[in-house]
Image 1 (cartoon, rainbow, N blue to C red):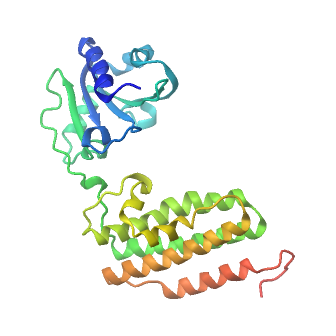
Image 2: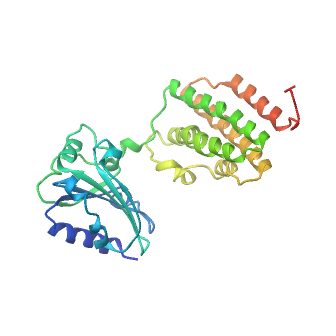
Image 3: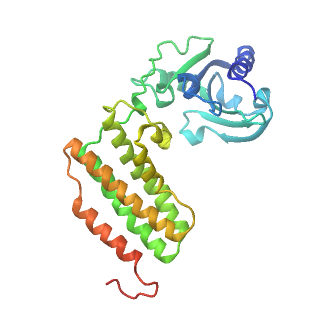
Length: 292
């Protein structure tokens, strides 16, 4: 496996001689010092004729043997940029983002840095001064923001709203849909947000837990993390019931803590009624014709 120094040398040496490439940026964890052995490389090329450049991807082989390549052209990004995401046979993954010069300059001149740059960037090559005036990274775009009461009420209510769907699926023995609601919708739309707020309020709203809760374990009390772990489970229906009730317990605990800290109202009646429904469905006979 090549080192970071070796790979970046390969890329900058090739690009320095390529007239099509006018600037290169390294972004994300490889630029802000938070990378580890398995971190991807996020490389941005600014290209003088992007449509022409996109016609031939053979340049990807300059940096190794690609095992897998995902191609996304400008249409996927409203004409903003294109992507070539490559996994090489020495286990290095590089995400190449390709900008036309005009689109790149538009981003540079915006009042605030886009998120990819705001988390950290390094200018590796700039042949024409295109990066002149780029603002320094602040990480504000990825820092946990204190919710308004309206936002708090929406996500807490939505979390409780999702739980009956999971209960219905488990009663019907419909595991796949239960996982969709619990592990896709609820976990990454409601539960993640609630956990972020809880962490944020403990760190004066100055923290970035990374994407999709990557650093949650690092910032949570061990006992609380164990209870959050209990919301994950496999295929057994009974275990999924346990995970659902674990969801409810943590949503209740964190929701009340956030509400108390921010002087918001916790929806206690909703909590009680949904909790009662979950227990009712959990013990409902499979041949029942009525919910009593």
